[in-house]
Picture 1 (spheres, rainbow, N blue to C red):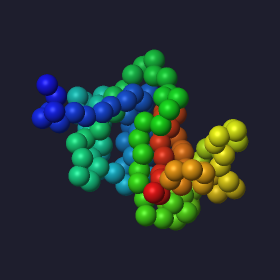
Picture 2 (cartoon, one colour):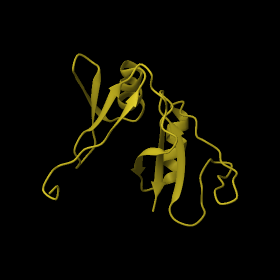
Picture 3 (spheres, rainbow, N blue to C red):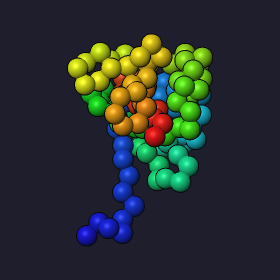
Picture 4 (tube, one colour):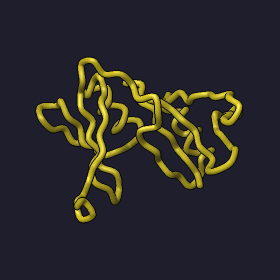
Length: 126
C-alpha cells in the first residue's frame, strides 16, 4: 500500500523562530517556512523535507529524532561546540560517553545534543 509513497517525518518544537535560527544558523540546513512560520521544512541533501511544527504544549522527545552521519565525529563535535552547542553526557551501564561527549562502544561512534526545544539529535560516524 505505501511502498511507492514518499513518506516524511516531523516533530514538534515550542518556538519555530528559535528552531529556524538553530537548524539554519548553527547546523547549516536549508530551512523553509510554511503556514505563516508555524511549520518549518528542513531540507537535507537527498531526502524529503522534515517537518517541524510549533506546538504550544510541546514536550521534548526523549529519544533521538534526527541523526546526522558525518565523516569525522571528533571534528563535527568540535565544530558544533565552537558554535555553542552543548553535548549530552551519559554514564549508564550500557551507554557511556567520554570526555569529548562521544560514545565509542559497540556500533557507530555517536554524540548527542539537543535543539532549542529539547529534542535529541545526534552526529554519528559509522
